[in-house]
Image 1 (tube, helix red, strand yellow):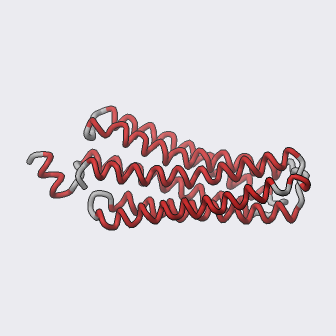
Image 2 (cartoon, rainbow, N blue to C red):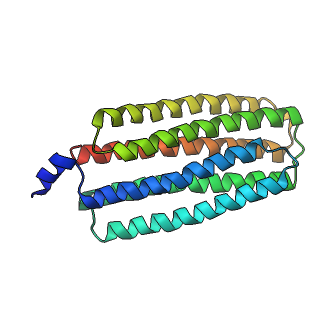
Image 3 (cartoon, rainbow, N blue to C red):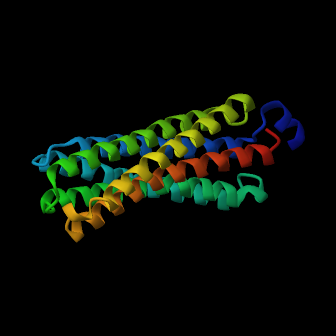
Length: 230
């Protein structure tokens, strides 16, 4: 049976299905990492022991993600998928792995701050953490929609387009949250020392990066589907 007919019947050949399945497993690690990140942000300032445990688990997930990404790269190098799509699948797995990297970096930064509290205003700190939780929860919703997208990619184009639009809309929602947070941070310079200001700025932007990565990954899935005639 020719590749064209196989695509007509099932859209993807086995190697491509396997690649999507592995990337979906990688995304599952990212989902757990973001759930733990929400728990870290919601932990009380004296909850160092809990935060240490959550951070350690995210570190384990990040290492598992690196191994999984490497296995995907090795699979691609063996020519398991259409040669013209090597770069697209590689970029897709890298974007999903980068979600884990961002979650890992954020968890370590938040643990560091818990160990050595900054001289921030407590009320301001509480408000910023609530908004950062909001950002991460938007990312979680994106990631769950993204996993659904991976599961139906190649079998239901209409639903795939709908999920991709949902992910894009959530990214735009996150941009609004981020912009409001940055306005608040820059407008509160008189309440914050430099270390606190820099920390809030850095962690907010890094949290928003997760949403950008997931939108890019969603776009990449749609581009692959289009290239394969799905």
